[in-house]
Length: 290
Image (cartoon, rainbow, N blue to C red; front, side, top):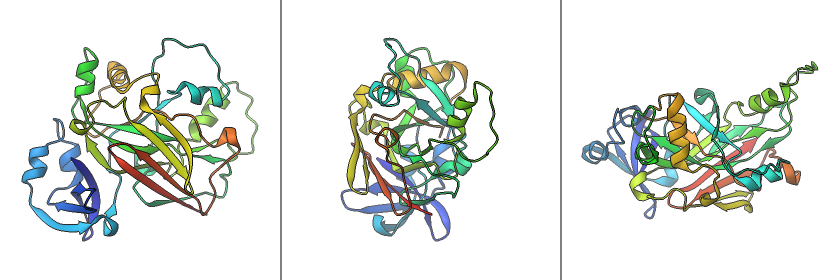
């Protein structure tokens, strides 16, 4: 099942997507009724809820699939080729997921949304990623099977990143400023496009067997398999649960493959469009304006 969040008649609703037919069934449910439920996504609840309308996807105003996650977590450096293109050539055999967070309220935007590039941002980069949506409360999962069993579904994600900070002219000589500049560059308003919907986990039994691709103005810039992740989805969820409680609706973006813009001298500019496409999910489109 593909589950979207949308605005319909000025209200937030849940929709069941028939991508092949280009239609969405608008259900008499608020997104919070689904994504904050204490169990995995309630397919029976959605299936038994009244259908308010059948509308075309072309006319639907899609929101971020989970509009208000408690946590928006991201994984850094999870594809070795991306580490290499970023100038890191460590010989790594055993890795742990490297977590950071984005503020969900101000970062999340939905499918076909417009990212407004601030005037003090000049090195904006794209990062196509598979994102996980947690479906039930999980703390200190005992094994990888339990961890993967807590996943409700998957969506596409674009971890937009400002690569060279220019917000503040003061020269701070502390040795850790490079890390904090990198982190702050992840926090721009609208820098977490997600969507177009969530494909439930039963339709993606193996999240390590998906092709992920990003096109910039129609040109393929990133193309890889999720099999290349250094930390697979189950390990990411297991590891995160060891030190924090994962809650229904939490989103975890799992890292980007090689092909980002910075190593190629390519940065996003007004007029650009990105499209992140992932097998069994769909395509997430983002427009960029001044």
